[in-house]
Length: 451
Image (cartoon, rainbow, N blue to C red; front, side):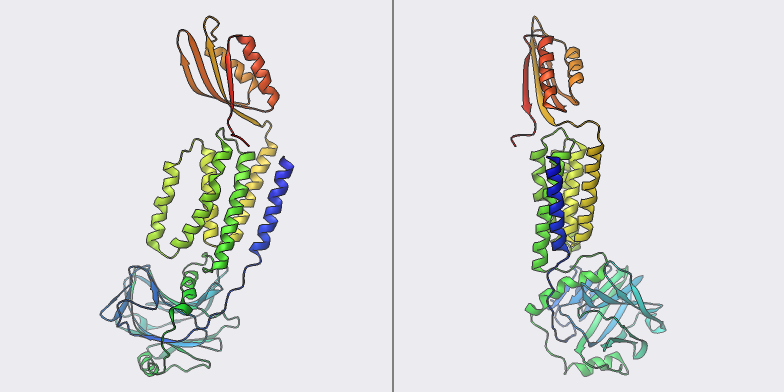
């Protein structure tokens, strides 16, 4: 049985590896420019954190909050007015996709342009100091990206001009307030360009000259894909953006990884409870967690609610032994990893855990294969004592746990959960108990259920 089980696990891992390293190709996205003066308090065409608001014609992004216009761009001229207060930094992420993003960091000391790569080393492309940023007044910012050359100007002064020899794919735009900073934005203009443009005398003048040339905002259908991409710029550990085919693959991985975990628990677990019945919950827990993580990644409020949802499993589930809790939390961990699209990490973790548990079982000197409930009843005048029964059980069982003990002057009843290494030990115990008292009533019940 063990050889067949190991062969099945190996086959499943190979199949999962084929899926993981042959992802579905991502569809290319074309987009258009836009102009936003924030006259509409509803922020149509933007995705943002719940606390982000429009007040007095200004977009206000509070601490640790974000705002992202829906779209994806390659070469462009981006101008906007910026004002901030509080300690921290303002981040402008552009060409944001699952491949990475360009991160422009603005703080009172100056600006830095960093190329971020998911699960890779970040590359600082350029930095510059400027006294123009050490103010509470409005700051005019212009970013020109053409022919892989980045030109960044503050209040009309060009501070950074650098060319990236390994450019990122077209992507979205995300504004983020980091730390305790509150960032105000106004007059955000995005104009598509195919050739490099020299920065004008000021970002405000450039913004006014581009208003008439800007194409209307793209429709909602072309924008829905880019919304998920802004998460990639917030943390290099985030998984890829949402795509229906990727989500389906992750759900299938959740099903098969939870199936492997359930087989490991049933055959190699050491719990005295009904392992097969308990392991049946792993698949539902893993798939549900995968779905939940995909949903809550876009909302801090929902993420906090997840803590309460998972606590239900911890404090409401009938956990009898620590091993059950460990397997249950590992099933949740599989769902979290796959929900965040961390396939490689999740499969490697599962492989390591299975190998460790398998080696532990192979190195174990004794292994109980028969898991039973045992009930012993003894009546007068040949009533046995608890000490006699316990000593006899300890000689023939691998594991022994007393569940119930009832005794009167006429009757003695004891219930145990016991495990035997071989079925022959069960027969030896039965004969020994009958020799102890011929009137002894013995009842065995399989604890694993019907296979």
